[in-house]
Image 1 (cartoon, rainbow, N blue to C red):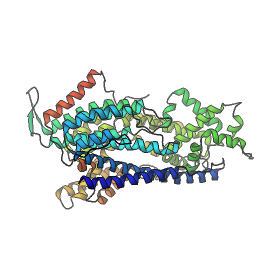
Image 2: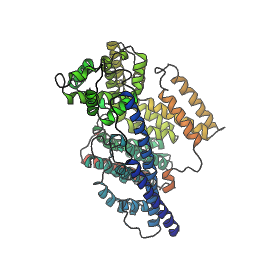
Image 3: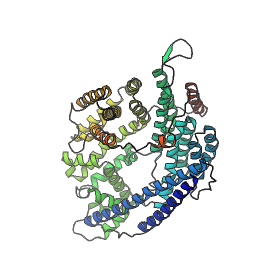
Image 4: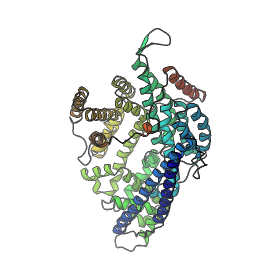
Length: 562
């Protein structure tokens, strides 16, 4: 067996070297820089995207090969073969993964400490290709990220919730302590989602072995199994929200968060009013044109415009230096371009349904609507762990606990969504604009993701169990939910409603999944390790005590930025 694995490992290593050479060859292929001409910018953006997509495909394959090499090394070590220290620094990952394959909790804990110490000094962030990132550094960071992800889905299945939580903390520390430059991409939110959902999923599975009824700690009442499951997930959420909120404080969801301050906002509005009339045209806001300008840099684009001799020149060029400082103009223009690219669907709504879009100096009106949407999204972002808990509950058929979870969230939200709707109506009156895409988002009132979770769960049940009573109930649920969701029209007709896109995605995902496709957790840890109810709550209690010792408190996720 070891000899076979050795042969596979040698072949995978050969693939890895070939991919590395290919990546260097494509990376070194030059692209001629564009002029300030619109057609030249669009063509440059097309060529740039072709090159970046090819590099990204090579990176993706390289990561999969690296993952195969790591798994093969772990299997060799688990079978007793002597494993040499990996040249790419994955030796500690291999040791822990080998212990996971052996399903040895004690050995995992023993090796995990060394891995955590090693990771603390390693970078996890990377600068993307579009912002000038180096492909080889991207490979190293993303390989490290997939190794962490691998453990995050396996550790909970071994009953190691504390180690899972600590690994998430280590990943956050890796990002905070090892910055890599301007424009770096964080993937901690995805790592957190994977680890947190894996912990919730494992708790649900363990709960199926619990006694149906148990006395409360004080002996005054009895708790059924759903009560205790709800309590366990609630305690896990409380512990995990601390890490999530701390991460959220360091994360910028939108470039428009730079202008939350009234002074910064008025400065941007003044720039748009003065210089947007002949600059912010519909032709200018072609998506390829915007991307090309940002990729080469607004400063360089402005220099090219100054050097270009044309009969019609934007007023901004005449105002540079004597009316507005060049760095101020670059900063404001960069912010506008990034905001439009981030919210291009909303820009299409604005461009198609309003008369204001014909006047570039009025673009600040759209930006003001987008600022409100960003504030709403910030609150929705803070609630994500709560939403993920509900998603796993409905997927696992825990409808009574999920119903209780939804009820508590609605009580917690209260009238908070009405504040955003009221502010939206004020903007509608102020600017005489509708902006259906933003209205629909705010009218979700933070609970639409929960309804989408139920839709997805109905689809999976209906497809996987045809002709059964469960499938009939799922179809009834689908009919009811879709009837309610289609009662009122949404959007401006340019974009498919979010719930309908999610429904289509779930149908395609469920219907096309092949029987041989195996979940990563089931491949590496095929059987969930038993964890008793008492031991589970002890681990959750220890996590809570750690937070109490650090004097960390969970802030209100609905706390407004206003």
